[in-house]
Amino acid sequence: MTLYALQKAIRDVNRDPAKRSAFFESPTALAAQYALSPAERDALERRDYCALYAMGVHGLLLRPFSILHSVSEADYLRAIRGKG
Amino acid sequence: MALSFACALGHAPGILAWREAAPAEQRERLYQAFGQLRIRLDAARLDCLVLFTAEHWANFFLDHMSPYCIGRAQEFTGPIEPWLKMERVTVPGAPDLAETILTACQEHDIEPGFSYEMQLDHGTMIPLHFLTPDMKLPIVPLVINTLAPPLPAPRRCFLLGQAVGEVVRRDARRIGVIATGGMSHDPGERDHGRIDESFDRRFLETMTRLDAERLKNYTVAQLRAAGAGAVELLNWIALGGALEGARGEVLAYEPVVPWATGIGVMAFNVMGTS
Picture 1 (cartoon, chains in turn purple, orange):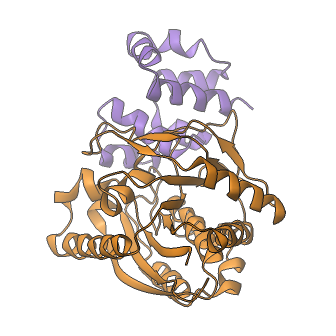
Picture 2 (cartoon, rainbow over the protein chains, first blue to last red):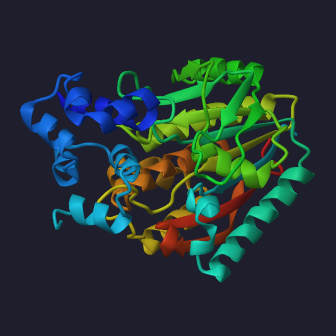
């Protein structure tokens, strides 16, 4: 059950300014702080919204995370619908 | 009479944050309905307000989720969202009423969690913005888990509402009870933008009659089929439990496409239910 750690990482980036700047500086270093599977780490580092959604990240965590990176609603929906 | 006011209304962030995006006629009909609620609330001269409400990962996370959490704080602040186009304010709490509700819940064989520290997000602050804009009326927020499965069953939310209703009816204070959130919407999910208008209208009709059996017999899956956010109607079902003997009136319903949600506004005639 590493989905919990994945969602915790995303929530921390969304809510904690220090974690957020750490992620913007080095997604790899931030991801290394959480007990993630290799696939989860990869999806988080690359901000692969399609994969993160498919892994089960809650929409109300993932959409705010995408907004931090100025992803438009249309692009976000295309990604999580697997058409992007 | 202690149960002095009751209503249900949506809390979509677009109501404030993206108000210009909505068609003017829809927005005006909703704002007028909110205005009518405020007139009724003012006329009820309330001492405090209990809210069946939702939050969106504002306080609680998967490290500790409870099905229901009652806010016992002396005061609450919100909204936490800087983009909501609403000033961050402090709202007084009503910890003694919160404690009375907790005790009554135990008597009804239901044990909510509680918190002495809770921040409010748009789920509570948008309704307060329209109902009590001076933010002086003491509140007891009662947050139902609408985020992380398993969610509490509708019949349990109804039971929770019955406990609250009983407390409110025998309390000497003039108390209002409201539900926030819903209706059909799927925020952050694949069907974002889809609004199941016929589901919403059927649900409003059930709330108008306060059909206890139908409200209790909803399943989370039936609510979820109208979108991930439609499970916030658990708040409305809890309100239904608190309002036995009352009748509802739909003041407005609008499926607002640019806000990606159906928004219902209801008032309830609570005269004679105490």
